[in-house]
Length: 194
Image 1: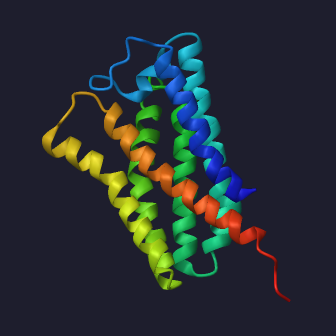
Image 2 (image 1 turned 135 degrees about the vertical axis):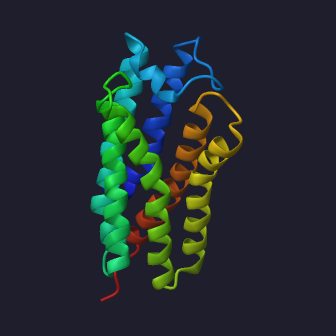
Image 3 (image 1 turned 180 degrees about the vertical axis):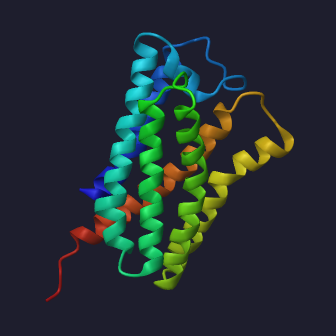
């Protein structure tokens, strides 16, 4: 259940985000934030917000019923999983509180994009302590990839809106989510040796 939620999370989120973008031709990748779509009346706002809060629930489910069980037998794994749970709750909050719900939307959005690389860094430590070097390296690179679009945005301000760093950061985290979800799903389907 948890592993499947990890795979489903980005599929649902990006399907809804891209559908909202396609339904609103005035959207600009360089001038807008993705969350600008959440306050467009009608279908655009509804599909965007539904995508975020429902994928946040899938994310939360993955973290609680998948990641916590997968990593939670030592304190580093537990801290990483709990931080990842908080990241999922922040994602849900972004969808529940659209951009015009000041200051809640901003706070949930800020929490999500800060907690995502932090939780991945802690999870890197959990994989390293389990001597899973490949997953530790992959997770570390993903943590860097989720932070890099924001580091570049604030240092060289390459676009006026934040849609590109938001999308790039979330996409990086999503690749990790799918890979780990698949790995967990595969491990769960292996026959147990008595």
